[in-house]
Length: 323
Image: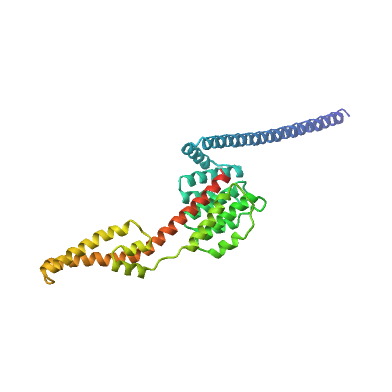
């Protein structure tokens, strides 16, 4: 009985000890898991905090950029924007704003290709999409890509803003004149637009340009050449030039008079007359040919001046509307 009791007591003690050890191990495992979980949470908190600090720093630098631009310190602003652009910006709106102002500064420095590259990176849902599209279109006009400029403008949705709708219409009217598409211009002119200080004066100017272009009639190069054959310089005067014809006249007529005098004195076979006559013939024929070409040159000058004025009047309202 004594042996039996001893074995019984030993078994009870063994079971109790085993249960205590198991619980201790379970407690250690739970403690370890809890420690790992806490470590993961701390890492996440640190990463989030670092990210928020970085975004805050980027926003502060962007605010500084706006201050530099308002102070017209464009080179400094471009430098800071370049550093921001090379940084990884997580906030999409901030990234688009940086791209917009980089393009804006390149536009003002007449780096139109660089400006286009910046404007085209802006997301379609961005808050700066509309101004970037207008600036993109005017840059396309400056590089003579009128079809791209027109396509960009047609995709701008500004139906909720009457002033911007006017601006869009003005830009399209200007492009139609640059393309010499008067039917398109007429269809755009028939659209009703409200009065706006942004576009009012330029709208009136577009009508003047259209009228001047339609009323312009190119002179005949044949008549210009014939008139210069009769009297050197007269063809250029007919083409529309006022100072140049007299220069041609003063060069050719005296030379013809000298050649005629040489003919009378030395005769048709003399070396003096042959040399002077050949020289007069070159000037005389060149004057006729130049008078015929002056008609085309005058036409080009007229349209180049009109185009320059149109482009200038397309730039100004965009600068008024957007910064």
